[in-house]
Length: 288
Image 1 (cartoon, rainbow, N blue to C red):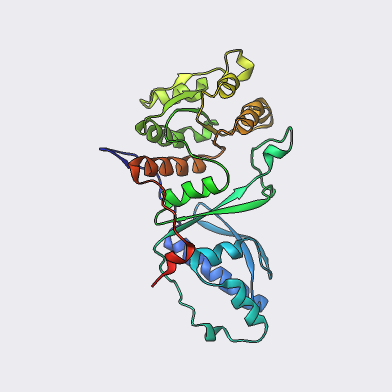
Image 2: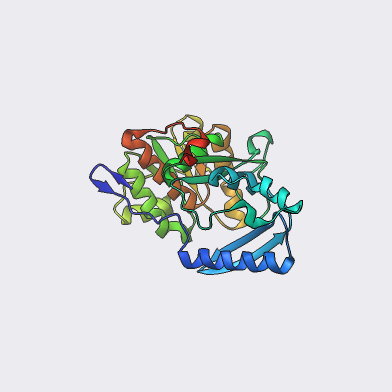
């Protein structure tokens, strides 16, 4: 990410070719062994370079229309014709087709419609829909995905950062990237101390339990443009619930993972370059 003469070096949002090849190998082996004709839904998890299989089902999923729109291949139509007896070879599909764009799928959550619901994520499925952002690169595609899901990434303002101990090393680059984009930073004492030690100016703001004025007051007064909050442990999650709930009700963009915050910095930097987000038809991405 480049902002003027400064640069923020954040990790690339892609899996190594070795991991992608392993995922392809495992998915192919599963399909052949299960003798699937049509569509198959596989869920993998990658941790420390190891590919884990979560589940596999011989059915369609919500990912099918996303894949079709992002690749230009009518996946569901082809699957239906395969199940009706046509041969896969007759469709002349191009293997490992190189796309000149990036598509990002974002989950849409109904948190605001239910009183008392926490926005923190867990292993269970909470989303009620999905949105898609597509553009020539990841930052703009991510920005569009957020906009499609009802969250507008700010271009300036004050960011509130409070992260768990294990996320503090990673949050340093995120905070530095935000500072380079002109944002001011407020943080809880532990996070602020860590950032100050890394040479990043961060004003301390009270947690709710530490007394007023605190971060919830700032959120209600419209002083916060973006929230980055990660936490762990039952007590810490309960203590920070009011922050996440107030963020939601006041429609302030929030990220509860460092990965999400990193992606947001990518998007902010791209938007602040002045090129903006252009609007194109989905068909134009696949025009010869």
